[in-house]
Length: 422
Ligand code: BGC
Image (cartoon, rainbow, N blue to C red):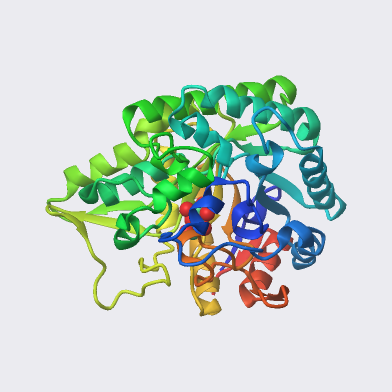
């Protein structure tokens, strides 16, 4: 069977600065990686040196047929000290954007993808009431310089991840950053050291991934709205949104209440934030099933990905349908991916995910694009370089790129905007 997607559908893949650029050394994540007892398995270091190799990388994406490139502009590079903006960094990102256009690739930018400048911690990090204005000012500077080159922007990536992490870790009383394991997180001292490296005390230290209580939600909301205002006042035509990580929340008998509460805290409570957005960035990787006693683990026979969660490409369309019941703005899939050594499973994951999207489109749901996570095998936060999410493999000793079958598969679909599902 052949599925035809709308001709103007956005087909592409996604990255984040800290995970691919290398040497994002003015950021809080960098500080966390360096310290004794750090919960990160590996340091990001040079990453895949995309900061140097972006021209070749973008040309490679174009040669595959991909039409859209999602990447983040790193706040820590643009504003290395409070109120001082780096012309070198601005010129760098201008060149990245222009390179996209030279290759007929549409840039899709995130203004924040988890990492923040170290100096922000000296002001109380993301707990500070000043953060919405500081972030809006950073957006304003970027949009004055580069706005006309940015047609789509996410103010922040996965505003709801801190809440998901909190729910996972409440038992140990910490709000950890991305994917941190329980043992590492409780290792003494490292956090104080990370704060020191940021020129702050541990009381002041509050990263993006700690934004999960009521007060934090207010700060997040203000940050998003002020950033959107700043962007729109300079570039009214840029489409602005944010993204959320959304597992397909399911229940078995007796788990209905828990599942409903999860959906409320993962998704519905954020709805007031996005009321005036131009689109919603939906990101899905798997499902979570709840029973009367909480989360039910996958069956013994279930296929698990390298991340330990279930291979469940059907989750994408299930989440799209649920989200579409609550919002009336268009949906763009800003991440959907799988960590696996077996690239044919990635092909299958994409194929099934897209077949699900096609059925949503047939039912009239307004979906505008699909950006796969990730363009490259990259730095998977606390897991270091051990997880393979990429369409393209990278040998980090030589920084050579090697195209996988899944990249060709998605590129082919992008070229024709259709999917042959056999
Ligand atoms: C994040 C990425 C991350 C991916 C895979 C998403 O939550 O936006 O930065 O690498 O999931 O875990």
